[in-house]
Amino acid sequence: MPSQSVLEQKKAVVAELSERLKNSITGVVVCYEGINTEDDTKLRKELRENNVQYTVVKNTLLARACDEVGLEGLKPVLEGTTALATSDSEYAAAARILCGYAKDHDNFKVKSAYLDGAVIDMDTITALSKLPTREVLLANVLGAFQAPIASFARAVQAVVDLGGADAAIAAKSAEEAPAEAEAEAEAPVAE
Image (cartoon, rainbow, N blue to C red; front, side, top):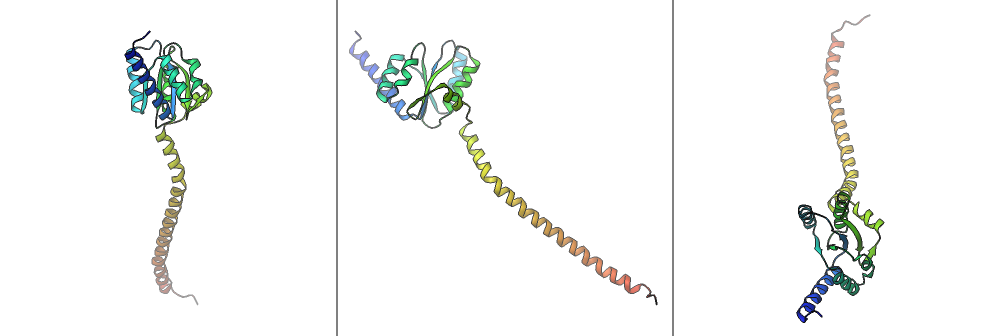
């Protein structure tokens, strides 16, 4: 039987995992077996840059944390090597990065995920991984809002340009009209 201090440490880890699961909006559970240190470092750096917390966890401790927060649907995949990636701010970041990484590495596999406190299936994880980043989505929305305004501005500019062209034509006509009048005055009148 483990000592009291070991049990206390494990309880603290379970409490920390439970809090992390509760506070995150999305999480992905992966099998990280067979990746080298260099690839793991690159993966962790990319996850960190996208505000995704990634840690290797013991299956038994994660299973207890899942029981505490109501994510029992994750428990069947908790075998072998397990790592947990959670995000507090962006829904698609963890899935996008980890699914992309899994495509390039045969041994690395996405096991399961949750979204807003509910376990999701692999099709939903794949769909989530294909969503663009938050910045790209915001740029698309702004582009959609900006398009009608830009079209209106071009139309107004065209009217201004045409008005300017009409004024130039009128000025040119005004300059030509006296010259024609003089030419007519100088021409002999046929009787």
